[in-house]
Amino acid sequence: MNFDLADLRGFLAVADFGSFRAAAESLHLSQSALSRRVDKLEGALGVDLFVRTTRRVELTTIGRTFVHKARAVMNELENALLGVADFADRISGEITVACVPSAVGHFLPAVIGEFHRQRPRIRVRLIDESSADILLAVANGEADLGLTYIGTQEPDIDFEPLLDDPFVVACPREHALASRKRLTWAELARIDYVSLAHGSGNRFLMDQALAQVEDKPEWFCEVRHVPALVSLVEAGLGVGVVPRLAMPPRSRLVSIPLEEPTLSRTIGIIRRRGRPLRAGPDLFRQLLLAFREPAR
Image (cartoon, rainbow, N blue to C red; front, side, top):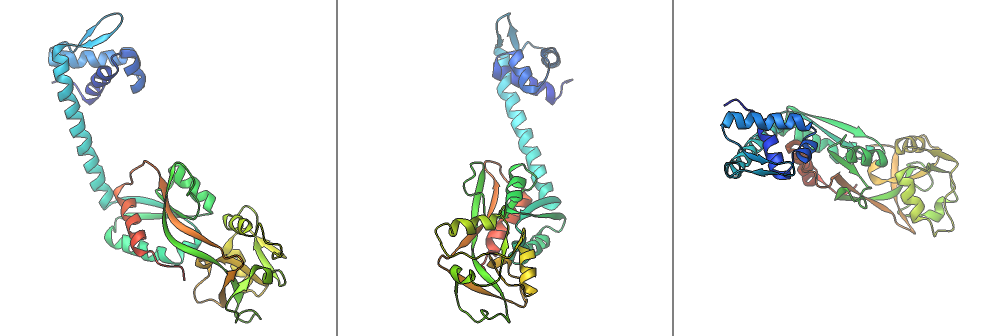
């Protein structure tokens, strides 16, 4: 028979809308183009599928019978195509994960390693950016998943918590405070302090926590990113406050818990709400949940 899936799709659209004009708009076609598709299908079948009047379009008796068969064919085809796409996605392709830089040096390498072992032909692309950029990358579809600490209040984002990450004082081992078991924010007001700049998600969390604190640390040097702050502290310029995950392993720094007030952030997986994940990203998500561990 001389017709194709586009003709079948056009027929079902007219049947659903009861109008060539509305069906054409839904398919982004002109009415004449849609009419030609339906005419072609009717010619191939040798029957009239619609009764056309100046005011409305109705299915014929044969048309009402055929519409169920046509819909079943389209559903079967779509399921088959989804199955093929899902299978192809399982064995090859690419996934994109946006993450805060502090996650890269901790649990993420183990997850990527296990994912590569299970799906060696799927490439993993990391976007290591700020929390705001990660949220934007997931929201606009640039990234399949995000690892960050913001997004819990976003209506179009699902947030799945992974671990609690407390803020600590990053302090050189030779510093006078290095042996302390705990420090308060007020004590930081009396020593050289390196701070994150306004606009940083971590700085925002700190400012919120310190809103009611009178004796606050006063910075003499300000940076935009946590790795830069850690480098300056390692160089002996002072101390700074960072999430514990941001503390580099095997460095000359110690991390000292903070009190009055304590502060932490929750690292979690974000994804677009109502958008099912493809097989590759969903496996990566499951591995993240399996590999999660408390912050050191």
